Length: 233
Image 1 (cartoon, rainbow, N blue to C red):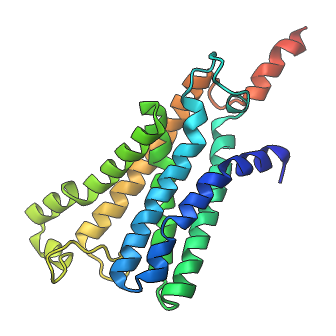
Image 2 (image 1 turned 180 degrees about the vertical axis):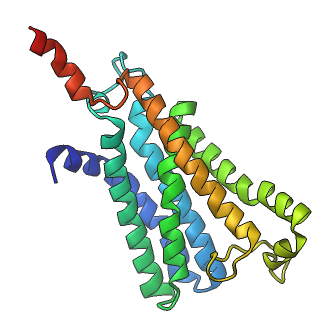
């Protein structure tokens, strides 16, 4: 692990601790399917916080005195790589707690925890850079992902494929979220496919906005750009 990566991981450590501890009380004291669902929801929020924390340095004006040198010494890939590592470590910690404390036979929750990393890496960074606010970026990301489940997804499936919609309704009338390989239906596939597609699109939109903010040329590192004038001398 090089020095830059170590420094970035240390910077993300406080937000990583929050991400891991946020769902822990629910895992410890609510040993049921609903408890695990709410724990997974809290973990999703924690991942969004961790992602927003990583990008908060990049929403300042690069030429202002508040902008740190560290925020200007990274490319988009160098920013995302440590974030991806810490998010994966948080997912591994959450999955371990869920299996050891809550239900050792529940492998669905760890898989869903891993899938949470997709919008955390794709949607949240772009929202933070676009709104220039970590809090607004997290809120808008949650609203966007939630709207793909309800009302947009539920309305589309309920209108055109009512039989699939009924498969996603629990006995108490609430919308359940099984994985596609447990109870496959159109609504579940719509949610996961749309979230993955938007995350993929927003990842590249976030990369472009990052380059605009830091005035980086496309597909070139900041270090190579900075070294060019000295070579001319």
